[in-house]
Image 1: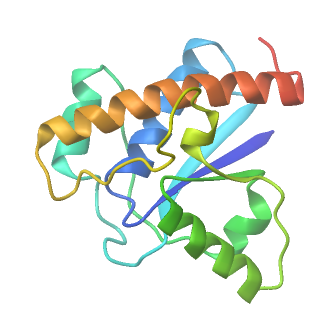
Image 2 (image 1 turned 120 degrees about the horizontal axis):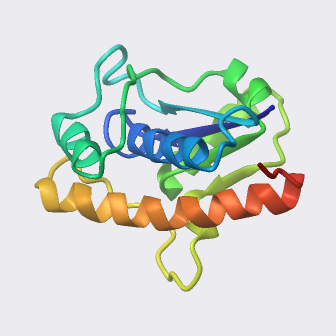
Image 3 (image 1 turned 180 degrees about the horizontal axis):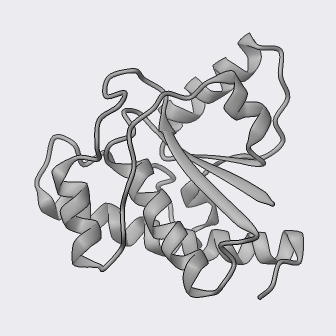
Length: 161
């Protein structure tokens, strides 16, 4: 079983949307029994909360089921997940600090947009302080990046239906 963890700041906007989109993609290609994913945040701002209403609205618009309660990244995650996927450089820095603090090594820590070809900006913008259009933009970025990430996993691990 390949385990993937998506990480943003509060775990109510970007990372739960990435988790939902990726789960939907895995199910649609019958790989949900080989690859599992979850999401969390680097902060403790929203622990236990549901995703932001605008995240839920965006997911529903695209017929993506979403069910998640916000939680904070911890050292157990760094041991249990094969891939840690950050939404932006600030979150990547926080992940790397946690890795160092716990004297751990993790080979597969990436920014999600590293898998998106032809992009110059590797950060997924945080839509929290904007309107619904920002969530739609994040959806489009994640949808494209996750397509490429899934192809990466298939090749890397020779995972097929």
